[in-house]
Length: 292
Picture 1 (cartoon, rainbow, N blue to C red):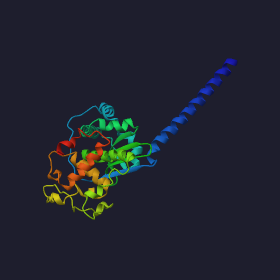
Picture 2 (spheres, helix red, strand yellow):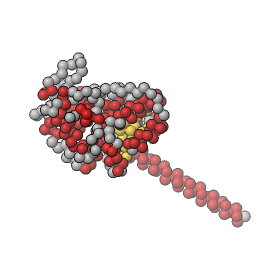
Picture 3 (tube, one colour):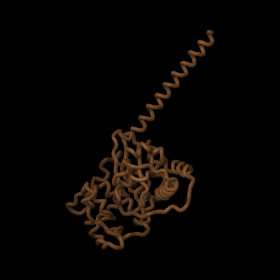
Picture 4 (tube, rainbow, N blue to C red):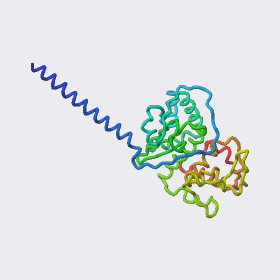
C-alpha cells in the first residue's frame, strides 16, 4: 500500500514536471516567432533590372542547406517552416521542390562571389542570418531584408527571374546594417556623388530615368558623364542607391563604360568598396575584376 502511494506521488510529480517543461517550451517558441517585431528595421526591393541565372542540375536539398550553413553561417528555410515569416511580410510559401532546388543552386552560385571571410564577421559578432525562400510577395516586393535589436537578420527572397540580383541587393543592405552598427555615419558624404540639387523620392511611381544609365538595346544610352544611377529605383533613397549599385556590379559579365575611373557611377562604386573594406575582407569580391 505504502509502495503504491509512493509510486502515485512519483507519477504525479513526473506529470507536473513534464507539464512545466511543455509550458517553458511553448513560451520559448512564441518568443522566437515574435522576435521579428522587436525594434525591426527593413529594406525591400521592388522590380529592377537583372540578369537571370538558370540552374541545370538537381542537388540534395538538405545537403545543400547544410553546406551553405557550414560555409557561410547562413540558415536557409523554405516551405511549411516559413509560414509565420511569410505571413509577416505578405508573401506565400515556396513548396515546389523543383523550384526550391533551382533557387538553392542560384543562391549557392551567388554566395560563391563573396569571400567566405565576409560572413565570419556575422558569426564572430553573434549576428544570426536566415535566408527565407518564398514563392512570391502579395505586394510589389521581390525581396526584403530585416534586422531587429537582437541582431537577427532575415533575407526574404521570392521566386523571381532576377533572383540572384535580388540577393546581392539585399545582402548589401545586410552588410550596411553591420557597418552602421559600428558607425552610423559611414556614408555621410554620399550626396556629394549625386547631381547638384538632386533629392531622392520615396515614391516608386514618380521615379524616372533622368540621370540613369540606360543599358537595354532598345533604349538610348545616356552619356556616362550625365549618369549617376544604375537604375531608376536607385533614385528612391540613398540606401537603395547603394544596394542597386552594388547589385549591378555583382552581376556584370563585362566592364561597362560607366565604370570608367572618371565617371559618376564609378565614384559611387569606389566609395562603396572602400567603405566596405574598412569592415570586411573584400579582396576577392567578384566585382573587383571589373573595377581596376
